[in-house]
Length: 347
Image (cartoon, rainbow, N blue to C red; front, top):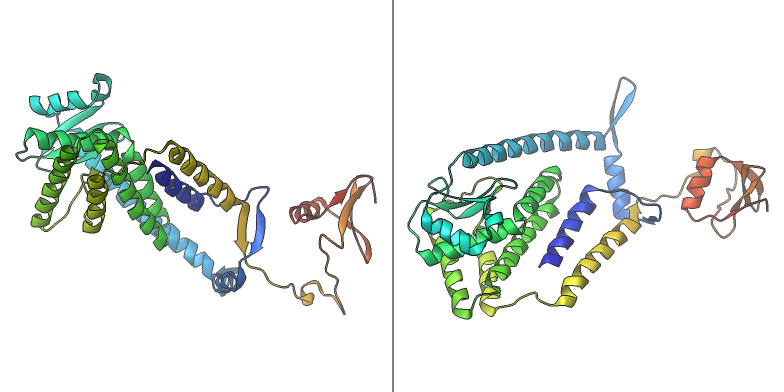
């Protein structure tokens, strides 16, 4: 599951950082890219001598909506974190004893348990000031143990930070439906990894008790008829019954991603796919009309097979069937990028 999460994170990185590397190869995107280019490159009007294109409108709309959504999310998250940070640590001996059993003293000093009526389901929150939030209702000691263990595992895996990055990425690319699919998969993968970590040391009967606690909380949330969680928090479960069924099945079957080869191979594949995605870029491609250059009669096509560059006395020339033509350094870089050979010291 860790390898799959890394792969998802790389997908987000690729989406957020669309750079072109020195070895990137340009490949024709086909008719679809040409169609999109025609739409976004369509001129709408001209204002004060500046042409306004469709993509200008799109970029402005993208920026405005992103700014509004991001501002609202950051304000909500700040309010939630501030609200729960001001709450005093719960002085419940039983809760603190359970936390002592789960984590070391050094780790415990960074985590506080707060039992409050402000939340309806157990969850955790905070990147720096970490809080485990438990609803203000009666739990048995066994139930509290499994709840605190689950939320502590989220905090220990730095899942809160991962979730914030995913939420921000969805806000930045609000127009892309695939980021929401990616978000759902990421949430589910994080929960499955948490379940696997929690149940790795549990016996079969204990795994059943762990699932019973989650199911009990899910039933309680259904009865409330409204699923609410603090902004940026990691709850005991998400409000998706199919996701919950998948988690239950994996825990009940005791499947663990314990293969050492798998833990190494999946991240390696993820890195390889990331590098490969930067090695190829799809672009629109059209045949250049002769009228663009004001040519009369037949024009000559040059490529890597019938032409090459050479340097003579510090100057660069392009050699082809029609002769030798002086070119500037900008053209040299362009031709080198298209794999034209260059010969030093003349022809």
